[in-house]
Length: 258
Length: 80
Length: 117
Image 1 (spheres, rainbow over the protein chains, first blue to last red):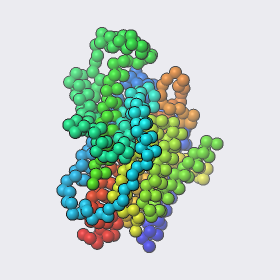
Image 2: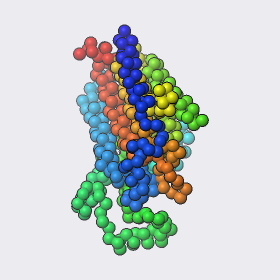
Image 3: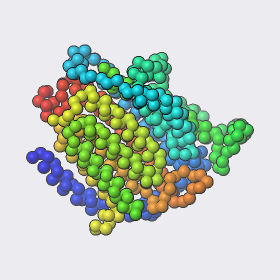
């Protein structure tokens, strides 16, 4: 009875939504209001303003840097909340009411393949983090791949050996890497220029020295790019990547533990 | 032609969502949820956003499915 | 109106997905099912925002030597990257709360929890 009532109410709610969907501007047209104002400016000026060829990376790390700052704070807060919910006040009486389920050993094929592929997956994750500013990729994508690698190794090697991936003393610092990187870089901008997360003005000599160094080791800069800005972005991406990987692995280990 | 392919993918999304709600076995619901996330990743790639597709594949079909499976293994398996 | 709806199918389908997720949150009793409905609602909102950013014949917004205009709108993609991460955070927290509720109360069905306390 309740389900019929809810279904009827939702069908009544769907009708004005469908009328709205028919009235919205044509899907895919280039005169959409969302396409002509701010996005046109970003598409034209992003490369020289922010220093990366991937415009989405430009937007999330430069034009909308505050949003990314909030995002890394949210995922760190989620880790703190998961630790608070699952690790406080564990009473052994309630924990033993769960019926014991027989565990199956992991098959040899899965174990061998995961251990064979693990260094290549880690290398690919590092490649995705580093190349986030020129090809699709970025900090959080590579960080999630590293976190998923830690989860796969936990399933194969057992918890004790896999938790050595995050050494005990470094663990809180690795988990807090992403928000800490953003705050440090933001404060550098605040101290040197006067606004949080602003790129500090770099001396012309320093900029040309960095460009000369990179073209000497074989990486000539493309048109309109600035090496100093690119290094800035890579530091931020590494912070997000390593922090995201540590948070995802820690959440899994906390939820898995008895 | 690409409009028909788009419509087929969206129909598959709606079918996966209805199947997730309907099944009573929570383990099967978690696996169908992973399929929903995979189809969504393909839709993102067809819309011209490879960054979002990579994130959705890694997060949705990777981490979220594992977390659901851990929860199902530590609580009940069937819904009453 | 039907041809307009067929042309704008990519706007109407996420709205329907949102209502399907809302049905799961309201009408289902099991806490894990409710949470899956919430996740479907979140991904439906992401699909709608992405559909606002599509341009006909657009390519990925990466400027390299083979790139040509028009480009897909980069702003919805940036918003959705943040949204996916926030959805992952709420998933992790909600699932750990469900594990803790099962340990304390022995059940995760809504009607039984209401009778308990």
